[in-house]
Length: 120
Image 1: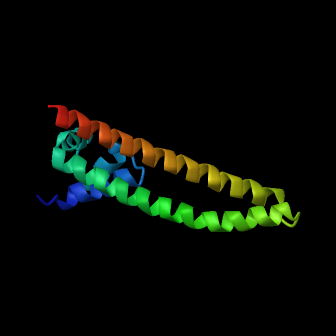
Image 2: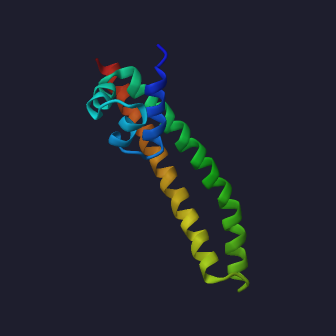
Image 3: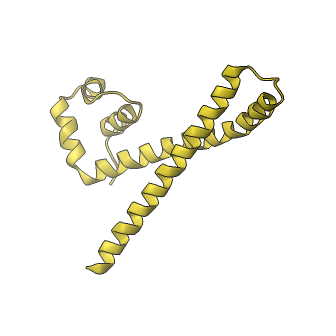
């Protein structure tokens, strides 16, 4: 089932970090309408897909920064990088680690759900 244009706009707004109130104003509906839409399985699935797409894109960008961070750390080891550059490189690797943890957590949760479904 395809979502209406209003629902698609709300999904984009929510993914962009707008509040439910702001999203309601974007499409000229009440906030309670947004809450009703959030109860709908199709709407929630589309919202999750949109969030997953953004997350995957941002994760790819972060991994792309890792190569630059390695070079910064190399310069830092040679004493040729500013402290702020080295701190930024460390921050990139910290975030990459967190992303990997999130990915592993999601995989574990999927396996647990699959295991529970197979038990039934």
